[in-house]
Length: 249
Image 1 (cartoon, rainbow, N blue to C red):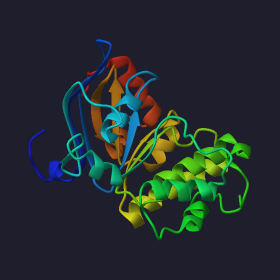
Image 2: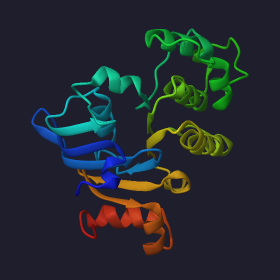
Image 3: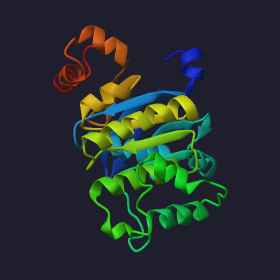
């Protein structure tokens, strides 16, 4: 990619990223460009490398090779600063089961040394304002997902990384989270990278799509371009990429 205005607007930029476990490359020569104040839909089959890439962005994993830039900072060299500006829900969120939603969030904020955050307001945003003193051990899967999203946004990060965030949510909950994501971008100037198997939800919110196949992103394209070429929508596009690999780039 040539240096230009679009590159300068990238809040996340990955170049030639490789990650190997026990000699096996799970991510291989991967490149990714996420623009500020946008929603990036991250698509791929199970095992394609989505979760690994998200963990590499946060610094939870170290790359075998390649470079990851977050807010123009090296994700490894400046990891503490990067983490202060990232909220994430990657894989199944874990909580202190005997504590309430409020107590879990307050504890999380204390770990991050953040004060004066309105926990009640955030719980209201994710639809958990009525849980009171109920312990998380009594929460349904959907409620846990909502609390995971609340924990990811409680410190008002610049970047939000969400791995299958609507798992376990009913149709109303899915709609509410969709509206929340759009609001966070518009009103809080967040940038969101979201992976989901529910393509229709990605189609509702994403500005840009990145498709990962066998550990490498084979294409990044705007949703508007997809709609022009694939009148049946994102599912038709995604299936064509799964069968066609790196063609049609």
